[in-house]
Image 1 (tube, rainbow, N blue to C red):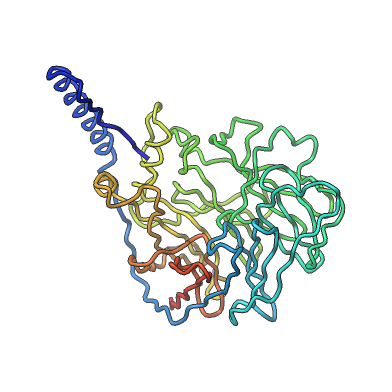
Image 2 (cartoon, helix red, strand yellow; image 1 turned 180 degrees about the horizontal axis):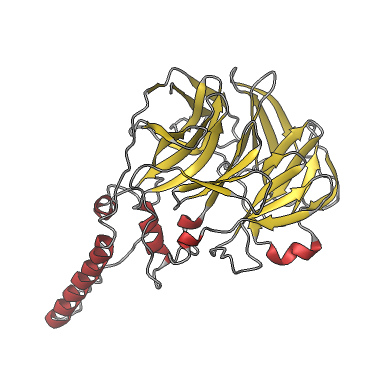
Length: 397
């Protein structure tokens, strides 16, 4: 956030006050100039409007330990559609019958190793005997069953000869664990851009649950090499799984392209999946502060969550409409507030079908977005902290 103070003192003489006034005016002028540098950027990139309705809302009841917004949740498809999340406040996994809004199981983790369990950040449910538990930091996971019993010792998902490539995994609903066959894929998050020429920086870890072998791959595209997006939100990558061919989709906040990995690390394909006229944001100044870089991100159109609708065979990409500098400077918008989302839809050939413009009067937690036969479900932010609310987006293409 940009912060500055207009220095005043009752003890200053008139001359000092005049100097101070000039200094304050100069500071404001410089900040405004910084704003004008990107004022030419489009606030929005409209596409053909896709009609939709919100015929249903589901409220999952929460206990007093559970926050209404969690960083990571998993949808389990089977005889009953289930929604599962981890509550770090009481080290428990909650499983809901989603359509009936009923908590059907609360799994309290049971760790008997005589030491404190590292803080768990995320999980991946494979079956009732194999739930992977990932700590917030480290290169390992635990395995528990659906009674919470943790088996044995930690399991490293990185080979000894790959240790120099590990940064820190960051698992969330926008960067979920993806499982294809016996292999899982985990984001390898770090601050800098991963250049082709750097032999130690990669964005994704592939770990084989059967063999225990790991490998690292995926770099940032060359289009970002000269943008000075290191250590900024622009650089982030999101993941999704495309069904039924089990390929891996990934994209970046700044980038008009979606990339498709189908098992061949040397043959990753790319497709432009962005509205017309969208371009990569301009480079940041070399000496830009982290606060100013955040303001630039918040006042620049960007992309976020990526997911796939197997029922309509569409690729869904969330676009984020930026705040304006005027609103931030006037104090009418908190620059820490998430940008408003819209939903772009693409067909199986990666052609843009149009957009779903969500109600701008409502607030949505857009990382929590998934598809069912009825349509898309997105978490809606309410004042009521006793429920986790999901709103149905029913659409036709």
